Length: 262
Ligand SMILES: C[S@@+](CC[C@H](N)C(=O)[O-])C[C@H]1O[C@@H](n2cnc3c(N)ncnc32)[C@H](O)[C@@H]1O
Image (cartoon, rainbow, N blue to C red; front, side):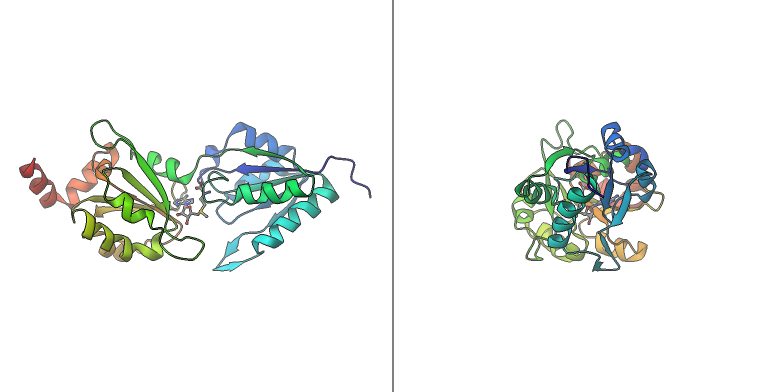
């Protein structure tokens, strides 16, 4: 049967996990989709909004990619030409370590109309949801969002630069590099700099640990925290309302020590 709809790609951010943290515009795009291609970090409950659409999982599970990036690019174009409107649903925001721009670039080469619906990135939404304010007057004037795993599978060199500043640092895809990150901070800053790690933020399965540079690897092992998780490093971590009591309970000595040094 000939497709009567204009071939179109809309790259949509699904937000960090909680189904209520998606935008109205994203829901409208899903309702209007003929095909939805979605990733592993997307909350599958959101697929209810695309009841009429063909749904394809293209993400990574148990370490294996269902599709390579090249295959996803080709699938977008062939599905759009065959069915019409393809929604590419991605965790968080599609342009924050999401390869959304690559998919748009590829699709435009093949004449597809394209659009982007921004999402709440885990880099911003997850810290906020646990009460961490990434900037705070007189504490942190800026924040960095850095990848723990570059395309060559290495920790971004930006971590070295960021660790020398007073900025809050948010690291995505960094759990496999936690020891390396800790070593960089030990070399460039202090052992007692606060750090929080949140796994599956905003989902029912959320887990978090809060400690400092010298204690965090032990705490992560004790609580069995793993990916997907974000790492937040900086003084703002201990100034947060929801975490202060936790921090005091677990790190009373460091608190007293720091206060004496003020
Ligand atoms: C490929 S990146 C995609 C980021 C996504 N585009 C965003 O804006 O959130 C995947 C990484 O995002 C982080 N991440 C995504 N969702 C998360 C969540 N709900 N809780 C904690 N970390 C999350 C993890 O560091 C994970 O390894």
